[in-house]
Image (cartoon, rainbow, N blue to C red):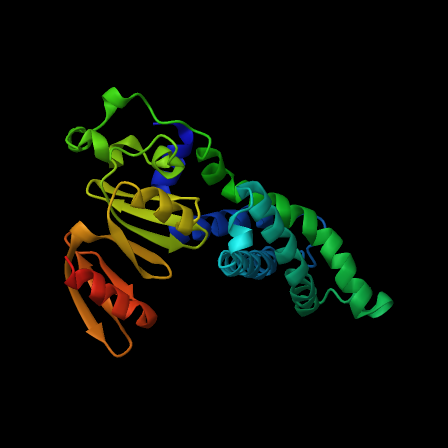
Length: 274
């Protein structure tokens, strides 16, 4: 297993971002970079807790919001995280200024005014915010460039697939899957700006656009999109429950996924034809 895969195995989804946030708070509290408006260690920890945790929430929320735009989804992954970092720094500038004010750092605000202080805060906050966000996402982005190992190392369940149902070589998403997971995908879910893929052998989190992942997987596995954020393989559906507000799909593995209200009729129609 390569280094990037090890990182991804240890941290996934929100747990990864929480872990990074805690590490950054501790690191900045110890280093005490110039600009922190307090000298007491307890206050320093509290100051960086607010600065870093709020910044992380803003960045993750922005990434989720931007992911809903098709044009943004088509961008290079490095460009995606750069744009998110830039917008996050812009959004955080007045918030960071307010945090400084809470910790009695009001010299700049009183001398040059709110607008100039906000601009100054952006130029101070922008570069480290962008670079840190790129660094946080780089293990996932770099994984996109790694190729799978020779076919001989595939699991036994994969070898049982009919040759006509093997993933096409141009289906990039399958190249991102770890060999240990096989290619029998049960479901795909959009999680933050990643796709959580569940197979009969486990699950993984991949930096990828859900729409593109569904397009690649549909060339091999028959399935349907039950929600804006969820796709399931038809053969893996154990049961369904419907209500006036949508519904729920239960997979053979026990995983439960929601059916959006606007897709209920489509899901019913497809399942009735099976």
